[in-house]
Image 1 (cartoon, helix red, strand yellow):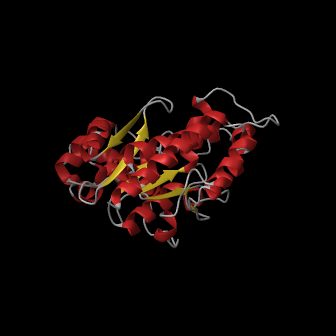
Image 2: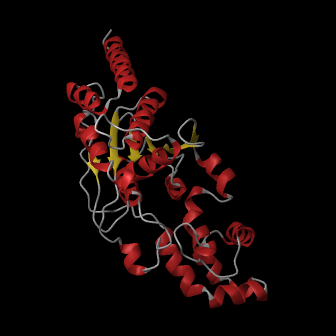
Image 3: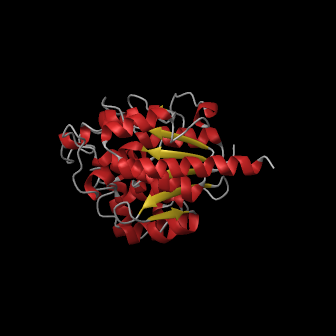
Length: 298
């Protein structure tokens, strides 16, 4: 496989909805999130030149994390109807473009993406606005993250160096880091009283979460006391923070290679959506891809 792009559908639609001004179809239905998803996809194709593409979505059912901790993400407001109504249109576009969609009840899109990346083995770029997925980055496997920076206008490609610069710990230790400090955006605490600086110091010295607890007798009393008292919460947070990489989904890599963004079905759909500018863009992208394919034959 040359290069697989895995797109976090929920994260990109959510970001697009909040980044772009209101936009409606000729029937008055909201469409700005779908517009943003298509725009991001076209940028990814131009910048990263993928051979394979797939998209992952969350399901409506409760995830194993919500069953483990009922308050997990409970503080988040309900999704706006103007956004939730666009998911079906997004899926219709992906179907028209022959881009496979993956999801699994009981798991988040993060877990599905982690599993597909694991099955692919190497040469993967994950497109998301969710920094939880930074833990999937691996220079050895050439797995990177392509993350929007401001709205959808700019994006940054993350390898292990960039992850360390942003998070303060290597990609492989992000779940250990969150086990200690928690994650307010997902509503879990980590070990109460342990902040980012202390967590980074402990991980640098002891290597990972488990080794910290194997060496409590070496750690200053005030800190070791917090660790002992908060161990149960820390271990729960570790499970919540860790992206699952063995979700029971079948990966059809051959289908991921069959995408075509300028298909007749897409053009018809865009006429329905009123995407005049995007119609011109996808025609140009399609023409360029075809020219590149022809050039590879000679």
